[in-house]
Image (cartoon, rainbow, N blue to C red; front, side, top):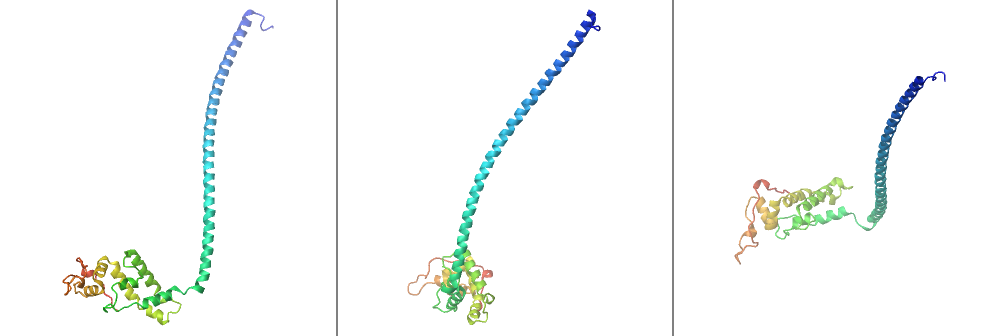
Length: 241
């Protein structure tokens, strides 16, 4: 009480205390304001994180469902593949016992076809027989059949290249090559389909006349109706047996 014995000193001390209290109050108010702003930002961040977590949970749920479907599909395909593999193995084990090899059969079949295309008794669709195809077959089918025959008739494809049947079938390779060219060149195939073997041979030998377009003596009408456009001479390919 000695320091505050006078009214002036007491008033001065009171004023200083009030100033310090005001300063403390202002600081406390600012701190509360800052804390409120920080809390609001934190709440907004938490809300955003919750939204992201929910979205991730939904994505995770969707991915789990997709993974389950993929696993089911994979298991189904694996089971089907194993079943097919077993079936193929069973068929392979039975094939040599119950069925003759295909290649010797194909050689024998091709060797029975006529190769004398100048003979009048040779069917006009013999070229298609050599390619094992129907006359209505499209060009990719004819080319594929020809390539398959050229590949498998080669003596190197046989375990017995000295077999007479293998050697005889190998002699058909140039003929099949020629047939492939005729039937896969649209202009030549048009002539062959329209004029037959005779007309094609005359065309390949530069005798540019289609016998089927010539009038028959008895009726005066052509054997086949409609004209045919011949290909350019540089497209003509001959076969020399």
